[in-house]
Image (cartoon, rainbow, N blue to C red; front, side):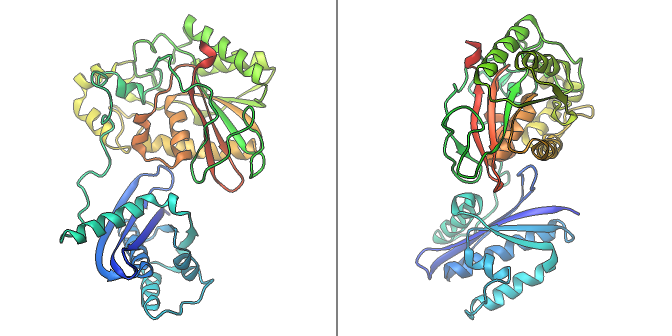
Length: 411
């Protein structure tokens, strides 16, 4: 049975005043927006607009799959509590709207969750777009392509390698990093930066922390070639072995890693073993941490793929559901695999700091999911060989990005 997340919101500029609603249906694993709805509804209250947003979101979910289960997330405490049956519906304007929402899908397949306003920005934006359209005397229309092209924002001259380096394993080799700062960017709500090291106690207690290490470089890395799980499985180059040694020394100095899990591919196992020998820890191999299978693109540069498979490449850049030529994995498929691996490893290493030695796409996917960012965010991050990132997971389900692309150990 499919599962959807519906986020809905409504607003009124005056309460009552010119009002509109917005709703989005999301894939709960990849965060992909599957459907959007918004409408200017004339003069109404905030509560009426919020209920109409809920109704629109549930209808879109039913249209996608009438048998799906739905998790509704809204920043309206009133709607969430009333639809959950915990608050009585007294206002005459609310009763028919609540009844209409309840009829769309069986109550057993819909759950309601309150979220802070800052976590409901997508639906809020749609509601404001609808109100803006109404003010201009027009109806809101869904853009033909809401998701920006992954190449948008890539510096001039980088299209031949920059996009590939943002996604393909072994394609990025920049020595620049974000440093070792303690800036915390929360996926759900802001967290206090750790006072020292990784895995420090926070307001929700000791988190489960994943320190994410991209493997050292291979012979394919400087040439920015697609290197996934379906290729030649290259070993570390001499430079990659030096990088692994440097990171191992840095991790030993910090002394916070308690366990090590690695991708089964050789470049990761070699990197992990170098760190394990320095830390005196065993290494566990997990298939879920392997890199994307890039199919027929394995071993090719971005320019070579552009020349040989232009249509497939355009489709891959435009949609997380598109797979590389020749039976490779789509980003949506990888996201499901990585999310399942994350849950399994969090259960096995609860409250501990675990080093995951893996690849570009799994690391970026873990970061993206922690931030609640859309799939195209994969193309907006740079991950250098042997770089460190870190995500902390708290008992309330929130995640906090604590570090991204730190290469200070290599300097």
